[in-house]
Image (cartoon, rainbow, N blue to C red; front, side):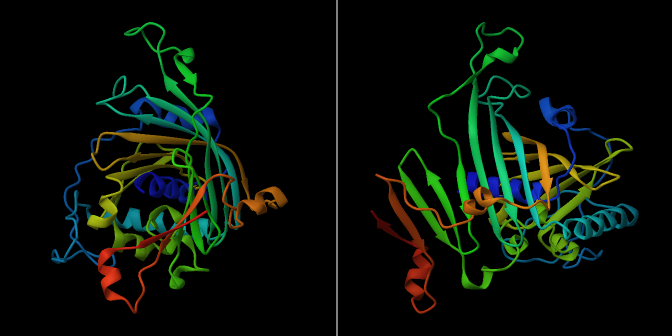
Length: 326
């Protein structure tokens, strides 16, 4: 489930994307080269609406990892409001993307991607989306220990990447290794609503005040043309899926050019770079079919995670129930 939530987060980011070239995005984000500015920022005071004040003890709430001055907080507020205004204009979106995955423990090095993947994202406001990894390349150097070469990442012809679809009523995840189509129905109160009300609202363009209630957010300046945002989850539930997220924005357009997602261990990370965006274009019949409830592939099982019933508190305590269909 964490990988599914992470890919949902990336769909959220690219709802805002337009105009970034692959070379620009890679130059900004790969090999650990996200800009670093030695800004002294300590712990923010927890608030409900991003205002200053004394810490409020709440169950499951994570303390702030930094503190913003009033001027820095005002700048963040302005960025979030501009982003909210800009993203509200997005109706449909489609793009290609590259994802580079780094693992300093099990990979070839902290700044050498272990896996390079390519795929496609499609989104239709308010609650439909598709994420699919199409090609996977693994690092297999011809000469171990030598400087990385482009040919060291080898296409895995028989390896199938993540693929999920949301039709507004449920999320369908293809689990190829198990030959299962896993269906996670959305609660009735979430159907027909914007994805901003889902589990990862920050990069979907939620209301600025809601973002500040859910995340500790700061801006770290990279250069005059870019805005670099960092978001740390306030809740234990969100922190179980990712440690924090970094987003690079074009200052002039407020369009993201790259996103970096740090896994819960704070070291492993995935960098996404976007290309060939189409914003508010007419989705043809092929793309429209992406958002239809998919049929179960031949020979697969359809596994439905039933939502806990309000009339069955014992089932709620046990968590979602599963049913398997042929």
